[in-house]
Image 1 (cartoon, rainbow, N blue to C red):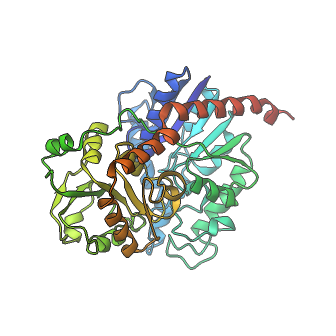
Image 2: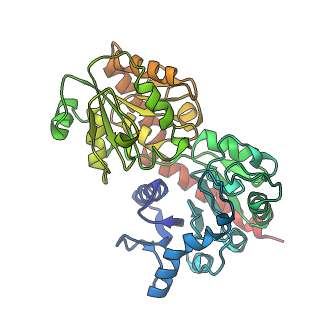
Image 3: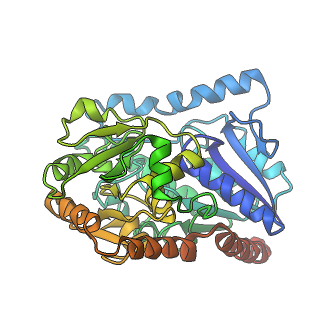
Length: 419
């Protein structure tokens, strides 16, 4: 069996990281894998990228060209992908490959025109890393819910017109998806799976739920004292960890709630451990000492940081899963999240491995932090969280689930193609 993964990038974003780990895990159980990308930055021979200088330059510019239609929406509030740009050679490469099954992941940024998907001549699995595959172009709908009927008057575009760009993109998806010969939609979390089942774009399609993997060997507990020594952190303080790229700038990430909650917690002797590219100190004056690690570029650095903390906070209001939360729990650090989305359905067992706060409620978020920081049995919380991740997301377990899904898609494909 050979699988061709398709993702816009090979080393940028969470989807790319998921694909690399899934590929490695599948190879360990005897499945051949390759990755087809629009923009290649690694030297991995298993990654197929543009070959000529002209194609490389054009592909680098494709995201900007694809975004052209949204310049007319001056009140746009969030990331939006029209996926209208033609002249991609991706489908030709897919059809020319010797792969038995094609596994799509994050394919926005001008990588594929929506209509091109119907010309793929192999069984297709499509993993949902955000809501874009079934919306009118937004990557998270902010609770709008119009993807369940028809898009238009799009809040993400700041539009009041029914027949706007979101309406047209949504209609294009409905028409194009109906022509795809063999498509299995995979929600990598239960929340996104339920959303896909309610969508009009994927009406009548098989929708399954197989998660993405976590490397539970790379992300495992490290002695807290050693981790703090390595990061030059105090041993006698309670440490709250949070962060991520774009956390301050993107309202969906919920930093506005966390900022308020940090001023409400009652626990004493607290310090903050922050990572990522967000301009945290520029937007807030915290009442606690702050240690900003900046961008952490590898698993070992993340493991050390997670292990040094007493609690990890993820205040997102819409999240497919929340991989940093899962990684933190794999390292034995309890998490506090809101009681919604991926963390609610797949990750945090309330008051067992962490705390799920009332959605969009800073007071409840602060209460959750206090509850974890003052728990009488922190070791038990850590063990419960680690067990959840190993049981649900271990890379070999997940690889075997995908192997079975691919085998079923391949077996069904001849019947799908028959007249």
